[in-house]
Amino acid sequence: MVTKYREIDADSRITIDADRLIVGKRLPFNVFIKDKGIIKHLFNKGMVFTNISKEILKEKGISEVYISKEEDTTINNYLSKTADKKTSPYDDPVLFKQYSFHKEEHHQIDKSLLLPNTTINFSLFALDKFDIKTIVEASEKSPATINKSVLNITGDILIKKSDIPLYHDYLNSLLKETTLPDENRTKIKALAIKENSKIVIKDLLDDPRSGEKIKESNVLVNNMIDCLLENRDAIYSLLTLRGYDYYTYTHSVNVGALSISLGIAIDLKRDDIEKLGMGAILHDIGKSTISHEILNKQGKLNETEYRIMKNHVIEGEKLLRDHKEIPDESFDAVLQHHEKLTGKGYPFQLAGNNIKLFGRITAIADCYDALTTQRPYKPAFTPFYALSIISKETGDYDADLLKTFIKMLGKIR
Image (cartoon, rainbow, N blue to C red; front, side, top):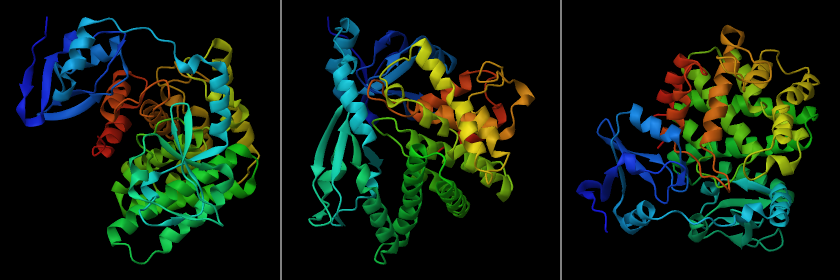
């Protein structure tokens, strides 16, 4: 029997009852809702529809959801068949070991800075799930010209770790380009700050005792602050959105940018924003003590692995205490970004007023970025759904800060 759906002419989408979404089953299509008269993307294709997902729809009073008209056949298959269980390639230990090794030998970059017709002297690679393939071959002796097709590649764009200095030179050359329109120049400036920050944090994760890199981090934090004070909307360029995998250095820069932006939004003084930014961008430095196999593991960590992972907070503090130039206040972000106001966080199970402002800010930024970051085994949550989940964790996060955070990210879809 073929299921009938009402078509929404304006958006070329069809509607089904929300209670027909199956708990525990992956969604084979993107799901949209109507919120205050606006169609919003709520669930990503590939995510598992859970009881929490169902509760959020109920709490929002949503009885119907929308799917692209092109997914008509997929919807019928989804509603009428039980998903076939297939062996996941992520369960292959040999494949995973190769992926983990190659991932650490490469560096993820923002492909929006790869401008068509510009020349590069470093090779480009694409990472899609576990597959890393060459898309542009280039070197100092044999440079290549970027064409538009590179921007249409599926997956993260990577360069060799050894080519990071060449990529850094490329970023500087873009900043010196005089023929770019002012609008493009502003965006490229923000993107370059982000990309340079990722390079420094990656270096710090490799050598967390480097005093030189700590000083560079402070310069980059101030560059971020200047950029955001000049233009609040620069936050959208400073964030890495819609990636295909998780990188600790990218996550660290995202959390730094989000925390700084929230600090500005609540009118913190410049000196306090700088201290907040330093703690936020360095909040996960303790992960430098954790093996790549655990950091890159596909799926849920076992009890031992989870205990090791949680210990990154304490290890991070130990490493950073060696750097006397880091303000004491910055350690609130490092030590408290996994604490919850209800006392259910870690490592100290702090509750209420025992969690400092910088800890509260970084906790929201950290949770949001983790939820909206894609993994090879798990699609990212949409910003709208991620904020719904955080808001649902009643009492865990500072309600006033969360309201400001949601307003701050109002343009992200």
